[in-house]
Image (cartoon, rainbow, N blue to C red; front, side):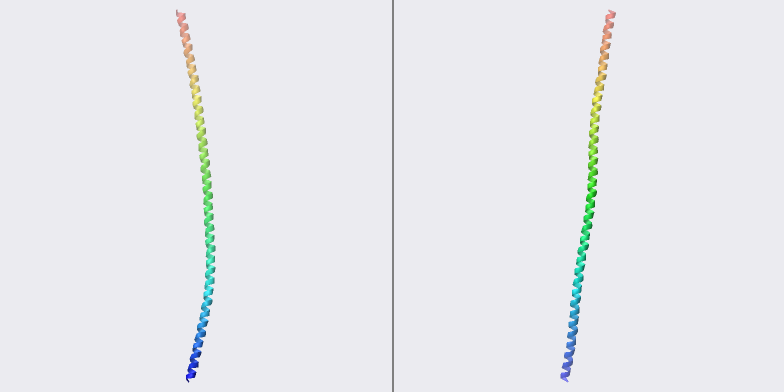
Length: 129
């Protein structure tokens, strides 16, 4: 009887050991699958992150292009402003020169008229004498 009990217990332990071994193998396989899945997710995360970096770079490039256009517009406005200021300065100088010429001409005409009047006064004096 004891031998039968021992054999029965041994068979139970062997069955338990086999069941434990099967569970252990199953867990190892599940861990391998989980590790593979984790690696695939990490690779997908890397691709997603790379996509994000590419999108950020595209946005930055567009912003730089917009800034370049803005700077070009500002440069053109500044050039136009300087050109207009130069034209205005030249116009003012020409106007001042023209005004001086006109004043000199007017002054000459006035001086000439004064001389004529002086001559006529002188001639009247001679006639009166």
